[in-house]
Picture 1 (spheres, rainbow, N blue to C red):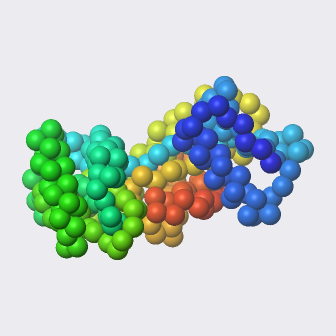
Picture 2: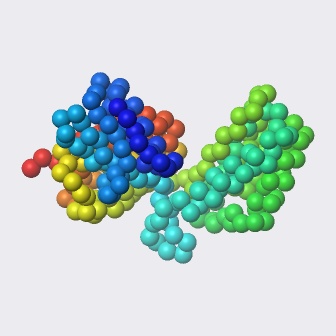
Amino acid sequence: MTIRSKTNSDEEFACRLLIEHLTKQGKSGFRCELNSNDPPDLLVTWDDGSQWGVEVTQTFQPVARDGGSDVVSSAPITEPLHRFGQKLKEATKEIRKRDYVLNLGPDPADSLEGRPIGFGRAWKRQTEMAIRQHIEADRTDPLTRTGIRFEPGGLGDRWKVLVTAGVAEMKLTTSVMLGRALEEKTRGLPRWTGRLAERWLLLLSAYLLVDDVREVERTLKKLIQSDPKLRGFDGVFWSGSSDRTLISIPVAVRQ
């Protein structure tokens, strides 16, 4: 079982997860590699010559677009906040003596009541100053400010960043998130190349609050059963945000 890649990417990471998953399932005699002629992103080639195609994508919490009723990915909110949290980790490493958990994102009340929060330069500057002061004073109580909750732990050097785009009704949000991923990737199936025995979609969740695998499975199957346009995959591999271990979910609708 081998993996071949020259890049550090979602596809490479997914290929490693897939190798681990298939091995734990007792499978042998296969290799996983990035497809140079994608889609699909990955090819699993078995010793008998048959192949599986696997398309890889991240899933993000959907949020309402400012000033509109349609929904968009939360990535433009969460990704910059995560980078900011990692930058603070490097900027404070010389003064930290404790473990810390940094939660970033809209406060629940602001999110529920639709009050926008700006995470611009002024907010970042004030946030970094407050966190530095908290660390230098070696305070053990949580620091709570607009858009952050900074929680000191015991003595150590661990730094964990948790980012959300706000709170939402979980079942509906999960359904919208999975539906958007299915719709986008199913539309691309006619462009897949090669004679493939099975076609799979591998979802890397970037939404921390979706951690109920049974709800994910129920939602995927309900979406596919109810909408023929979302059909075409033999199954979905799910990798949760808090537990990256792959779960395989057969979803093919047999006629």
